[in-house]
Length: 472
Image 1 (cartoon, rainbow, N blue to C red):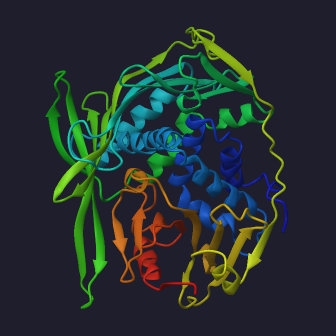
Image 2: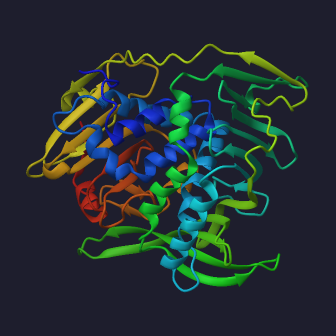
Image 3: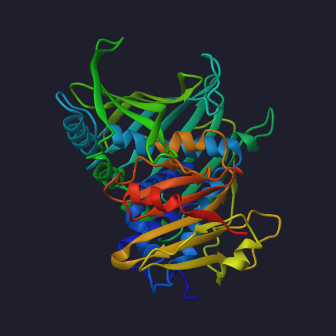
Protein backbone atom coordinates (compact mmCIF):
# COMPACT_ATOMS: atom_id res chain seq x y z
CA UNK A 1 0.00 0.00 0.00
CA UNK A 2 1.40 3.40 -0.92
CA UNK A 3 2.67 5.70 1.82
CA UNK A 4 0.04 8.14 3.12
CA UNK A 5 2.55 10.99 2.95
CA UNK A 6 3.01 10.96 -0.80
CA UNK A 7 0.29 13.37 -1.85
CA UNK A 8 0.33 17.01 -0.69
CA UNK A 9 -1.61 18.71 -3.43
CA UNK A 10 -5.30 18.19 -2.66
CA UNK A 11 -7.57 20.10 -0.25
CA UNK A 12 -8.37 16.83 1.52
CA UNK A 13 -4.69 16.07 2.00
CA UNK A 14 -4.05 19.58 3.25
CA UNK A 15 -6.79 19.25 5.86
CA UNK A 16 -5.68 15.84 7.04
CA UNK A 17 -2.09 17.02 7.04
CA UNK A 18 -3.05 19.86 9.32
CA UNK A 19 -4.73 17.45 11.69
CA UNK A 20 -1.87 14.97 11.58
CA UNK A 21 0.62 17.67 12.45
CA UNK A 22 -1.04 18.46 15.77
CA UNK A 23 0.35 16.88 18.92
CA UNK A 24 -2.28 14.77 20.72
CA UNK A 25 -1.39 16.69 23.90
CA UNK A 26 -2.12 20.06 22.35
CA UNK A 27 -5.89 20.15 23.04
CA UNK A 28 -6.69 23.58 21.61
CA UNK A 29 -5.05 22.96 18.26
CA UNK A 30 -6.25 19.36 18.11
CA UNK A 31 -9.82 20.36 18.89
CA UNK A 32 -9.79 23.12 16.29
CA UNK A 33 -8.57 20.69 13.68
CA UNK A 34 -11.11 18.10 14.74
CA UNK A 35 -13.92 20.62 14.54
CA UNK A 36 -12.81 21.60 11.06
CA UNK A 37 -12.78 17.95 10.06
CA UNK A 38 -16.32 17.38 11.32
CA UNK A 39 -17.50 20.49 9.50
CA UNK A 40 -16.24 19.13 6.20
CA UNK A 41 -16.78 15.43 6.85
CA UNK A 42 -19.08 14.73 3.94
CA UNK A 43 -16.63 16.36 1.54
CA UNK A 44 -13.64 14.50 2.93
CA UNK A 45 -15.02 10.99 2.99
CA UNK A 46 -15.07 10.18 -0.74
CA UNK A 47 -11.58 11.56 -1.26
CA UNK A 48 -9.95 9.86 1.73
CA UNK A 49 -10.39 6.36 0.33
CA UNK A 50 -11.66 6.93 -3.18
CA UNK A 51 -11.74 4.14 -5.77
CA UNK A 52 -8.27 3.35 -6.97
CA UNK A 53 -6.69 5.83 -4.57
CA UNK A 54 -4.51 4.13 -1.96
CA UNK A 55 -2.68 7.25 -0.81
CA UNK A 56 -4.78 8.41 2.13
CA UNK A 57 -5.74 5.21 3.87
CA UNK A 58 -3.04 5.34 6.49
CA UNK A 59 -3.72 8.91 7.39
CA UNK A 60 -7.46 8.31 7.58
CA UNK A 61 -7.04 5.55 10.11
CA UNK A 62 -4.44 7.49 12.05
CA UNK A 63 -6.79 10.47 12.18
CA UNK A 64 -9.65 8.54 13.72
CA UNK A 65 -7.32 6.66 16.02
CA UNK A 66 -6.07 10.04 17.22
CA UNK A 67 -9.63 11.18 17.87
CA UNK A 68 -10.21 8.00 19.84
CA UNK A 69 -7.03 8.46 21.87
CA UNK A 70 -7.92 12.07 22.63
CA UNK A 71 -11.11 10.95 24.35
CA UNK A 72 -9.19 9.37 27.24
CA UNK A 73 -8.61 9.99 30.06
CA UNK A 74 -11.75 11.87 31.01
CA UNK A 75 -9.88 15.09 31.80
CA UNK A 76 -8.28 15.16 28.40
CA UNK A 77 -11.65 14.29 26.83
CA UNK A 78 -13.30 17.10 28.73
CA UNK A 79 -10.83 19.68 27.43
CA UNK A 80 -10.94 18.41 23.86
CA UNK A 81 -14.68 17.97 23.69
CA UNK A 82 -15.31 21.39 25.17
CA UNK A 83 -12.95 23.14 22.79
CA UNK A 84 -14.26 21.13 19.86
CA UNK A 85 -17.84 21.99 20.65
CA UNK A 86 -16.88 25.66 21.13
CA UNK A 87 -15.20 25.58 17.73
CA UNK A 88 -18.26 23.99 16.13
CA UNK A 89 -21.24 25.44 18.01
CA UNK A 90 -19.79 28.92 18.44
CA UNK A 91 -19.36 29.15 14.71
CA UNK A 92 -22.83 27.75 14.15
CA UNK A 93 -24.30 30.31 16.39
CA UNK A 94 -22.25 33.05 14.94
CA UNK A 95 -23.98 32.02 11.78
CA UNK A 96 -27.45 32.10 13.25
CA UNK A 97 -28.41 35.56 14.59
CA UNK A 98 -31.08 37.73 12.97
CA UNK A 99 -33.56 40.46 13.54
CA UNK A 100 -36.20 38.78 11.43
CA UNK A 101 -35.30 35.17 10.68
CA UNK A 102 -32.81 32.54 11.79
CA UNK A 103 -31.13 32.66 8.39
CA UNK A 104 -30.54 36.40 8.64
CA UNK A 105 -29.18 35.97 12.15
CA UNK A 106 -26.76 33.34 10.89
CA UNK A 107 -25.55 35.52 8.05
CA UNK A 108 -25.03 38.60 10.23
CA UNK A 109 -23.36 36.62 13.01
CA UNK A 110 -21.10 34.90 10.49
CA UNK A 111 -20.03 38.27 9.12
CA UNK A 112 -19.38 39.57 12.64
CA UNK A 113 -17.38 36.48 13.56
CA UNK A 114 -15.25 36.62 10.44
CA UNK A 115 -14.62 40.31 10.96
CA UNK A 116 -13.50 39.66 14.53
CA UNK A 117 -11.09 36.89 13.56
CA UNK A 118 -9.61 38.40 10.42
CA UNK A 119 -6.71 40.77 9.93
CA UNK A 120 -4.16 41.74 12.57
CA UNK A 121 -4.35 41.68 16.34
CA UNK A 122 -4.66 39.28 19.24
CA UNK A 123 -7.98 37.58 19.88
CA UNK A 124 -8.76 37.26 23.59
CA UNK A 125 -11.63 35.09 24.75
CA UNK A 126 -12.68 34.10 28.25
CA UNK A 127 -15.39 31.47 28.28
CA UNK A 128 -17.16 29.91 31.25
CA UNK A 129 -18.16 26.31 30.58
CA UNK A 130 -20.56 24.10 32.53
CA UNK A 131 -20.45 20.36 31.85
CA UNK A 132 -22.82 17.68 33.06
CA UNK A 133 -22.08 14.74 30.71
CA UNK A 134 -24.06 12.26 32.78
CA UNK A 135 -27.21 14.42 32.50
CA UNK A 136 -27.62 14.32 36.28
CA UNK A 137 -30.44 16.39 37.80
CA UNK A 138 -29.80 19.38 40.08
CA UNK A 139 -27.92 22.65 39.80
CA UNK A 140 -24.75 21.22 41.38
CA UNK A 141 -24.61 18.08 39.24
CA UNK A 142 -21.91 19.25 36.82
CA UNK A 143 -18.65 21.15 36.94
CA UNK A 144 -17.65 24.64 35.82
CA UNK A 145 -14.40 25.62 34.10
CA UNK A 146 -13.00 28.93 32.84
CA UNK A 147 -11.06 29.00 29.55
CA UNK A 148 -8.82 32.04 29.01
CA UNK A 149 -7.55 32.00 25.41
CA UNK A 150 -5.22 34.27 23.41
CA UNK A 151 -4.52 33.83 19.69
CA UNK A 152 -2.25 35.97 17.50
CA UNK A 153 -4.22 36.13 14.25
CA UNK A 154 -1.14 36.91 12.17
CA UNK A 155 1.45 34.46 13.52
CA UNK A 156 -0.78 31.68 14.84
CA UNK A 157 0.82 31.83 18.29
CA UNK A 158 -1.63 30.90 21.00
CA UNK A 159 -1.96 30.48 24.73
CA UNK A 160 -4.76 29.13 26.91
CA UNK A 161 -5.15 28.39 30.59
CA UNK A 162 -8.11 26.43 31.92
CA UNK A 163 -9.14 26.66 35.57
CA UNK A 164 -11.89 25.13 37.65
CA UNK A 165 -14.44 27.14 39.61
CA UNK A 166 -12.01 27.41 42.55
CA UNK A 167 -9.16 28.79 40.43
CA UNK A 168 -7.14 25.57 40.25
CA UNK A 169 -5.33 25.15 36.93
CA UNK A 170 -6.63 22.18 34.95
CA UNK A 171 -4.63 22.56 31.77
CA UNK A 172 -2.24 24.86 29.96
CA UNK A 173 -1.32 25.01 26.31
CA UNK A 174 0.72 27.48 24.32
CA UNK A 175 2.93 27.98 21.30
CA UNK A 176 5.44 30.81 20.93
CA UNK A 177 6.51 29.78 17.42
CA UNK A 178 9.60 27.93 18.68
CA UNK A 179 8.09 25.62 21.30
CA UNK A 180 4.75 24.05 22.08
CA UNK A 181 3.86 23.90 25.79
CA UNK A 182 1.33 21.70 27.56
CA UNK A 183 0.25 20.77 31.08
CA UNK A 184 -2.59 18.68 32.53
CA UNK A 185 -3.62 18.65 36.18
CA UNK A 186 -3.63 14.84 36.20
CA UNK A 187 0.18 15.02 35.84
CA UNK A 188 0.60 17.38 38.81
CA UNK A 189 2.50 16.53 41.98
CA UNK A 190 0.49 17.57 45.07
CA UNK A 191 2.06 20.62 46.65
CA UNK A 192 4.69 20.86 43.94
CA UNK A 193 5.31 23.30 41.12
CA UNK A 194 3.55 23.18 37.78
CA UNK A 195 5.60 20.93 35.51
CA UNK A 196 5.03 22.18 31.97
CA UNK A 197 6.37 20.09 29.11
CA UNK A 198 7.69 21.82 26.01
CA UNK A 199 8.66 20.43 22.65
CA UNK A 200 10.23 22.11 19.61
CA UNK A 201 7.78 23.15 16.92
CA UNK A 202 8.41 21.18 13.72
CA UNK A 203 9.71 23.16 10.76
CA UNK A 204 6.45 22.83 8.84
CA UNK A 205 4.16 23.09 11.87
CA UNK A 206 4.41 26.86 11.98
CA UNK A 207 3.30 27.04 8.37
CA UNK A 208 0.30 24.82 9.13
CA UNK A 209 -0.74 27.08 11.99
CA UNK A 210 -0.85 30.03 9.62
CA UNK A 211 -3.27 28.06 7.45
CA UNK A 212 -5.57 27.31 10.39
CA UNK A 213 -6.31 30.93 11.27
CA UNK A 214 -9.74 31.02 13.00
CA UNK A 215 -11.34 32.95 10.13
CA UNK A 216 -10.61 30.10 7.74
CA UNK A 217 -11.99 27.51 10.14
CA UNK A 218 -15.07 29.60 10.79
CA UNK A 219 -15.78 30.05 7.10
CA UNK A 220 -15.86 26.27 6.60
CA UNK A 221 -18.30 25.81 9.45
CA UNK A 222 -20.48 28.74 8.37
CA UNK A 223 -20.83 27.18 4.95
CA UNK A 224 -22.17 24.02 6.58
CA UNK A 225 -24.65 25.70 8.92
CA UNK A 226 -25.84 28.59 6.84
CA UNK A 227 -28.85 26.74 5.45
CA UNK A 228 -29.54 24.32 8.30
CA UNK A 229 -33.34 23.92 8.15
CA UNK A 230 -33.46 22.67 11.75
CA UNK A 231 -32.32 26.01 13.22
CA UNK A 232 -35.05 28.54 14.02
CA UNK A 233 -35.41 31.86 15.86
CA UNK A 234 -37.05 31.20 19.23
CA UNK A 235 -37.22 34.64 20.82
CA UNK A 236 -35.75 38.10 21.32
CA UNK A 237 -34.94 38.64 24.98
CA UNK A 238 -33.53 41.22 27.38
CA UNK A 239 -30.64 39.75 29.36
CA UNK A 240 -29.80 40.50 32.98
CA UNK A 241 -27.11 42.96 31.85
CA UNK A 242 -29.70 44.88 29.82
CA UNK A 243 -28.53 43.72 26.40
CA UNK A 244 -31.04 42.68 23.78
CA UNK A 245 -30.34 39.24 22.38
CA UNK A 246 -31.68 36.70 19.90
CA UNK A 247 -32.13 33.07 20.89
CA UNK A 248 -31.86 30.42 18.18
CA UNK A 249 -32.83 26.82 18.75
CA UNK A 250 -32.06 23.52 17.10
CA UNK A 251 -34.35 20.80 18.51
CA UNK A 252 -33.20 17.20 18.21
CA UNK A 253 -35.35 14.12 17.72
CA UNK A 254 -34.92 10.40 17.46
CA UNK A 255 -36.77 8.91 14.51
CA UNK A 256 -37.70 5.25 14.23
CA UNK A 257 -39.70 3.37 11.62
CA UNK A 258 -42.63 1.41 12.97
CA UNK A 259 -43.82 -1.99 11.81
CA UNK A 260 -46.56 -0.40 9.70
CA UNK A 261 -44.00 1.71 7.83
CA UNK A 262 -44.85 4.93 9.64
CA UNK A 263 -42.20 6.94 11.45
CA UNK A 264 -42.23 7.75 15.16
CA UNK A 265 -40.42 10.92 16.27
CA UNK A 266 -39.40 11.37 19.89
CA UNK A 267 -37.83 14.61 21.26
CA UNK A 268 -34.31 13.97 22.57
CA UNK A 269 -33.10 17.45 23.46
CA UNK A 270 -32.44 20.97 22.25
CA UNK A 271 -29.53 23.30 21.53
CA UNK A 272 -29.88 27.02 22.24
CA UNK A 273 -27.65 29.77 20.91
CA UNK A 274 -27.85 33.34 22.15
CA UNK A 275 -26.49 36.33 20.22
CA UNK A 276 -26.19 40.02 20.96
CA UNK A 277 -28.94 41.74 18.96
CA UNK A 278 -26.69 44.67 18.08
CA UNK A 279 -23.23 43.18 17.51
CA UNK A 280 -24.31 39.57 16.75
CA UNK A 281 -21.59 38.37 19.08
CA UNK A 282 -22.13 34.89 20.48
CA UNK A 283 -23.11 35.27 24.13
CA UNK A 284 -24.06 31.76 25.18
CA UNK A 285 -24.62 28.25 23.86
CA UNK A 286 -26.45 25.49 25.66
CA UNK A 287 -27.13 21.81 25.01
CA UNK A 288 -29.84 19.89 26.83
CA UNK A 289 -30.99 16.29 26.53
CA UNK A 290 -34.46 14.94 27.25
CA UNK A 291 -34.46 12.71 30.32
CA UNK A 292 -37.53 11.48 32.18
CA UNK A 293 -39.67 13.93 30.26
CA UNK A 294 -37.52 16.97 31.08
CA UNK A 295 -34.69 18.77 29.33
CA UNK A 296 -31.51 18.41 31.41
CA UNK A 297 -28.64 20.79 30.59
CA UNK A 298 -25.39 18.91 29.89
CA UNK A 299 -23.35 21.78 28.47
CA UNK A 300 -23.33 25.58 28.62
CA UNK A 301 -20.68 27.95 27.29
CA UNK A 302 -21.00 31.60 28.28
CA UNK A 303 -18.76 34.24 26.71
CA UNK A 304 -17.33 36.48 29.42
CA UNK A 305 -14.76 38.33 27.27
CA UNK A 306 -14.44 38.52 23.48
CA UNK A 307 -12.08 41.26 22.33
CA UNK A 308 -9.46 42.02 19.70
CA UNK A 309 -6.31 43.45 21.28
CA UNK A 310 -3.64 45.47 19.40
CA UNK A 311 -1.06 43.23 17.76
CA UNK A 312 1.73 44.62 19.99
CA UNK A 313 -0.13 43.80 23.21
CA UNK A 314 2.16 42.09 25.74
CA UNK A 315 1.29 38.39 25.92
CA UNK A 316 3.72 35.86 27.38
CA UNK A 317 3.37 33.17 24.73
CA UNK A 318 6.21 31.24 26.42
CA UNK A 319 4.33 31.24 29.78
CA UNK A 320 7.23 33.07 31.45
CA UNK A 321 4.78 35.10 33.53
CA UNK A 322 3.60 32.06 35.50
CA UNK A 323 4.96 31.55 39.02
CA UNK A 324 6.15 28.27 40.56
CA UNK A 325 6.67 26.61 37.16
CA UNK A 326 9.19 24.01 36.03
CA UNK A 327 9.73 23.45 32.30
CA UNK A 328 10.68 19.98 31.09
CA UNK A 329 11.99 19.56 27.55
CA UNK A 330 10.58 16.76 25.45
CA UNK A 331 12.13 15.47 22.22
CA UNK A 332 10.53 16.46 18.90
CA UNK A 333 7.57 14.32 17.95
CA UNK A 334 8.37 11.38 15.72
CA UNK A 335 6.35 11.98 12.57
CA UNK A 336 7.63 8.94 10.71
CA UNK A 337 4.72 7.10 9.17
CA UNK A 338 5.84 3.50 9.42
CA UNK A 339 2.41 1.91 9.79
CA UNK A 340 1.41 -0.58 7.12
CA UNK A 341 -2.17 -1.45 6.22
CA UNK A 342 -3.93 -4.52 4.94
CA UNK A 343 -7.16 -5.32 3.13
CA UNK A 344 -9.38 -7.82 4.95
CA UNK A 345 -12.20 -10.14 3.97
CA UNK A 346 -15.44 -10.17 5.93
CA UNK A 347 -14.44 -13.52 7.43
CA UNK A 348 -11.10 -12.16 8.63
CA UNK A 349 -12.72 -9.09 10.20
CA UNK A 350 -15.42 -11.18 11.91
CA UNK A 351 -12.70 -13.07 13.77
CA UNK A 352 -11.08 -9.89 15.10
CA UNK A 353 -13.77 -7.44 16.17
CA UNK A 354 -17.44 -6.55 16.31
CA UNK A 355 -18.32 -5.16 12.90
CA UNK A 356 -21.29 -4.35 10.71
CA UNK A 357 -21.65 -4.57 6.94
CA UNK A 358 -24.44 -3.91 4.46
CA UNK A 359 -26.52 -7.06 3.97
CA UNK A 360 -26.60 -6.42 0.23
CA UNK A 361 -24.20 -4.40 -1.85
CA UNK A 362 -26.05 -1.48 -3.48
CA UNK A 363 -25.92 -1.48 -7.26
CA UNK A 364 -22.75 0.14 -8.54
CA UNK A 365 -20.99 0.02 -5.13
CA UNK A 366 -17.87 -1.83 -4.06
CA UNK A 367 -16.85 -2.83 -0.55
CA UNK A 368 -13.41 -2.47 0.98
CA UNK A 369 -12.26 -3.35 4.50
CA UNK A 370 -8.91 -1.93 5.66
CA UNK A 371 -7.01 -2.03 8.95
CA UNK A 372 -3.57 -1.29 10.32
CA UNK A 373 -1.40 -4.40 10.32
CA UNK A 374 -0.02 -5.92 13.55
CA UNK A 375 -2.29 -4.05 15.96
CA UNK A 376 -1.60 -4.61 19.70
CA UNK A 377 -3.65 -7.49 21.10
CA UNK A 378 -4.49 -5.54 24.29
CA UNK A 379 -6.01 -2.61 22.40
CA UNK A 380 -9.43 -2.29 20.69
CA UNK A 381 -9.13 -3.35 17.07
CA UNK A 382 -9.33 -0.41 14.64
CA UNK A 383 -10.62 -0.81 11.10
CA UNK A 384 -12.69 0.77 8.33
CA UNK A 385 -15.52 -0.63 6.25
CA UNK A 386 -15.94 1.56 3.16
CA UNK A 387 -18.39 1.48 0.27
CA UNK A 388 -17.72 3.41 -2.94
CA UNK A 389 -20.23 4.05 -5.71
CA UNK A 390 -20.43 6.04 -8.91
CA UNK A 391 -19.98 9.82 -8.93
CA UNK A 392 -17.97 9.74 -5.69
CA UNK A 393 -20.83 8.25 -3.67
CA UNK A 394 -19.40 7.06 -0.35
CA UNK A 395 -20.57 5.31 2.82
CA UNK A 396 -17.94 4.42 5.39
CA UNK A 397 -17.60 3.34 9.03
CA UNK A 398 -14.54 3.62 11.30
CA UNK A 399 -14.42 1.65 14.56
CA UNK A 400 -13.78 3.94 17.54
CA UNK A 401 -14.69 1.68 20.48
CA UNK A 402 -16.66 2.76 23.54
CA UNK A 403 -17.04 6.49 24.17
CA UNK A 404 -17.12 8.47 27.38
CA UNK A 405 -20.46 9.52 28.85
CA UNK A 406 -21.82 12.64 27.24
CA UNK A 407 -19.46 12.66 24.26
CA UNK A 408 -22.12 11.83 21.69
CA UNK A 409 -24.73 14.13 23.22
CA UNK A 410 -22.31 17.06 23.28
CA UNK A 411 -20.83 16.63 19.80
CA UNK A 412 -23.43 14.75 17.72
CA UNK A 413 -26.67 16.34 18.90
CA UNK A 414 -28.43 17.15 15.62
CA UNK A 415 -31.16 14.48 15.92
CA UNK A 416 -30.79 10.72 15.74
CA UNK A 417 -32.25 7.70 13.99
CA UNK A 418 -32.84 4.22 15.44
CA UNK A 419 -32.95 1.21 13.15
CA UNK A 420 -35.18 -1.82 13.66
CA UNK A 421 -32.14 -3.80 14.82
CA UNK A 422 -31.30 -1.28 17.57
CA UNK A 423 -28.44 0.60 15.91
CA UNK A 424 -28.62 4.36 16.54
CA UNK A 425 -27.25 7.10 14.28
CA UNK A 426 -26.39 10.33 16.12
CA UNK A 427 -25.89 13.03 13.50
CA UNK A 428 -23.37 15.84 13.65
CA UNK A 429 -24.69 19.38 13.10
CA UNK A 430 -21.78 19.95 10.74
CA UNK A 431 -23.13 17.73 7.97
CA UNK A 432 -25.31 18.82 5.11
CA UNK A 433 -28.60 17.62 6.53
CA UNK A 434 -31.05 15.90 4.22
CA UNK A 435 -29.46 17.18 1.03
CA UNK A 436 -25.70 17.21 1.38
CA UNK A 437 -24.03 14.26 3.07
CA UNK A 438 -23.85 13.12 6.66
CA UNK A 439 -21.46 12.49 9.52
CA UNK A 440 -22.64 10.59 12.57
CA UNK A 441 -21.79 8.27 15.42
CA UNK A 442 -23.22 4.80 14.81
CA UNK A 443 -23.83 3.25 18.24
CA UNK A 444 -24.31 -0.50 18.56
CA UNK A 445 -26.39 -2.12 21.34
CA UNK A 446 -23.14 -3.55 22.75
CA UNK A 447 -21.84 -0.05 23.51
CA UNK A 448 -19.25 -0.01 20.73
CA UNK A 449 -19.35 2.92 18.33
CA UNK A 450 -18.36 3.72 14.77
CA UNK A 451 -17.69 7.08 13.15
CA UNK A 452 -19.85 7.10 10.02
CA UNK A 453 -19.17 9.46 7.13
CA UNK A 454 -21.10 9.54 3.88
CA UNK A 455 -21.54 11.77 0.86
CA UNK A 456 -25.17 10.61 0.68
CA UNK A 457 -28.20 12.50 2.08
CA UNK A 458 -29.34 11.61 5.59
CA UNK A 459 -32.45 9.81 4.41
CA UNK A 460 -30.39 7.50 2.21
CA UNK A 461 -27.88 6.95 5.01
CA UNK A 462 -30.76 5.92 7.28
CA UNK A 463 -32.04 3.50 4.65
CA UNK A 464 -28.60 1.91 4.35
CA UNK A 465 -28.27 1.71 8.13
CA UNK A 466 -31.47 -0.35 8.20
CA UNK A 467 -29.67 -2.97 6.11
CA UNK A 468 -26.57 -3.22 8.33
CA UNK A 469 -25.99 -6.65 9.82
CA UNK A 470 -23.38 -7.89 12.30
CA UNK A 471 -20.57 -10.04 10.96
CA UNK A 472 -20.71 -13.53 12.40
